[in-house]
Amino acid sequence: MYGCELDDDRTKMGFEQYGYDGKDFISFDKYTMTWIATVMQAVITKHKWDADRAYTQQTQAYLEGECTEWLQEYVQYGKETLERRAPPDVTLLHKKACGSADTEVVCHVTGFFPHDVYVTWFTDGQDELEEGVWIGEVLPNQDGTYQLRKTLTVRPEEIKRHSCTCRADHSSFIEAQNYTWDPSMIIPISICNDHQSCTSIYITAAPPHSESQAMPPDSCVSDLLSRYLTRVRLSC
Image (cartoon, rainbow, N blue to C red; front, side, top):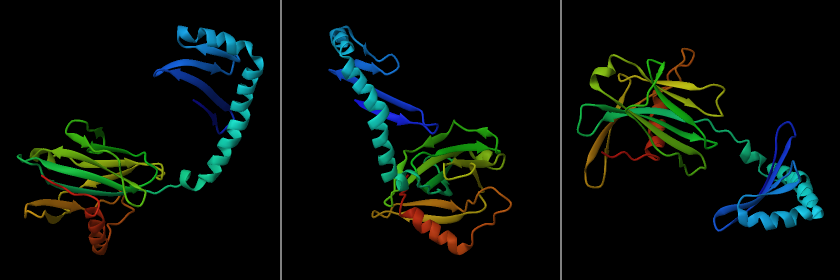
């Protein structure tokens, strides 16, 4: 296995290493221009390759020359995809937890690219929550973007006592965005399957927590809901 890296400051990094039977065997140290035997069985090979100065110099030249040239060319080919940034749409919804009086609040983050996103739940905008929080996998959407759900379980006595905020951070944002759950701003929805078993959920309009941004008009809520329901199926 071999490869190379080219940092923003034009620093070049390269590696070449070999394995045998599922374990590391020998690798090239470009700083000392020698080979490093990872296991005793590789010592003979190390001495043989160290003695072949032409092969060592060729390896060094490839890792710092031809390899990085190809890397820059491939980056140009994929520049449009590598630099693509799609900000996520964030929706909050809640439903009664199965078999208890608790409420499950879902922070649904979707439509983002690239893949990496950081989503957290906070109480009163300060304390990050870990207990009672469930996070799903980052899943692909049909348009090449991704989605993620992070669910917070809230006890009845906590609903009026604390505010719950979902914070989403993504490379498309200048700074992390906060979305505060307001139980009073809800739209009740019933989802039924083919067996006539229904689940009631409540979808909450969730703009970023900022006084400078107004709530979306009602016409946007129905569009948001239709896009959400095509991507998520909730079951109890």
